[in-house]
Length: 204
Image (cartoon, rainbow, N blue to C red; front, top):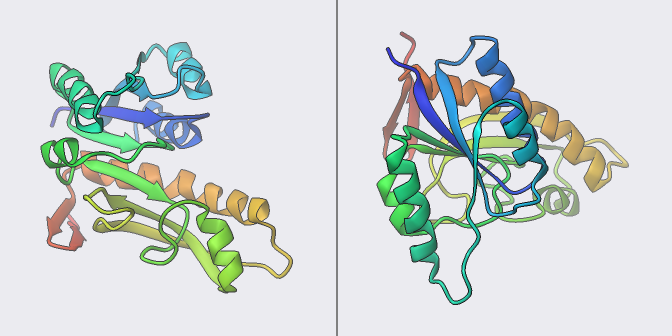
């Protein structure tokens, strides 16, 4: 089985990108990060990608450019590289329906909460404000909603008395670095089966 060709989208430091790349380099994932794409030319993750010999591409939205056209440019770029999987590792733009439809069930995202609870931004603050005893992180396939796609993996993280948003976010991030590579590995091993809202994991 040939290695899957992966495009990673980032906007900042790309710590989840680094975690996934680490597992690939150890031979744990049957995939190869072909390109790292960012909307931010100053993203620290681009430098890390370049240091590891990975192609980097910056796509900035042109003034007055419709979002569909912006993502159509990116989609064309991905097709030229025969990308199998898109991994959103801290990419701060919402994808438009045209690219979502093109890569249906081939776009993985991670969210720092146990979806469907606390979608959108500032998920850790939402969890603390609500007073939950557990939060966590979720890997899911992207659909046209905001953090509403089918769930692939989840990991719970306890909320401690006196937690700040930063403290909780740090503990959640540690779990993200474990389950995101795991989800990518399952995809690359053709072990994820999507049926409606449900994602099943093949045992063999």
